[in-house]
Length: 232
Ligand code: ADP
Ligand code: ADP
Image (cartoon, rainbow, N blue to C red; front, side, top):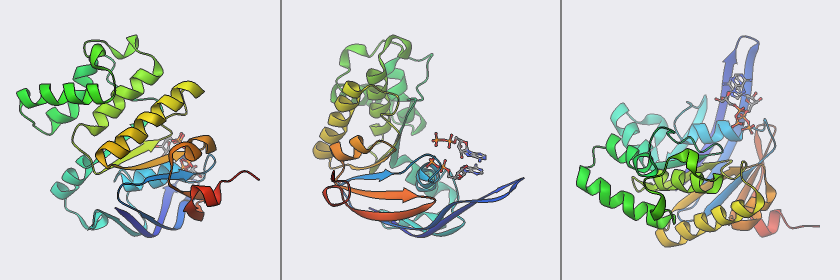
């Protein structure tokens, strides 16, 4: 589903060049939950930003569903971005909008007809267990509920891949478990490929099939979670 080869990213800054990623190779399969784990500064955000087309790689190739994203035109890029859902540590919800409006937002951008939007929003809120909160504002929700809204929003346009950037890092242990259970449920129900970036080893152990370990801007290990992250 996502094939990355020879990926390199160098940031130009006034104190000189900063290499954030060096020779990254990854093959993420359709329908799997894939973890990318590493400590702060390892290059995780840069990697997810390259996959999500927010950063342009300095070298190398990224293919998503068979398309080389470094060679797409503006319009093709817009369509491809729509097929990537994303959730974040701090949820990034629109605070002045209701839960339903937050979920409707990407559908409005995609010019989905109004009547279809209403039905789709109901389905999505049901999927994440928040039907009762459609009219609430984010400030009235718990952290876990906010992340559920963000998940519903990320799934609105039927993405091929869901990218999760430290999606449970701001949540307590119990809420983390319930969000991970929801992600696993969505993975199984919809066959959605999920890529999960985290510094939390428990998160990877809980739901990932395979994992890549990133250290000092390079992938140092890739494999099944049971083979790589077993306790000594
Ligand atoms: P992580 O997400 O694992 O914490 P990042 O991808 O944020 O790692 O950062 C990897 C390296 O790249 C770090 O050394 C960081 O300081 C550097 N870096 C990240 N973004 C930029 C940027 N926009 N400009 C310059 N350096 C950056
Ligand atoms: P995260 O918490 O996801 O690792 P960071 O705090 O590393 O995020 O980065 C937040 C933002 O700042 C990102 O857009 C990243 O590209 C940018 N950034 C990170 N490190 C640097 C840096 N050394 N110089 C400039 N920008 C940076």
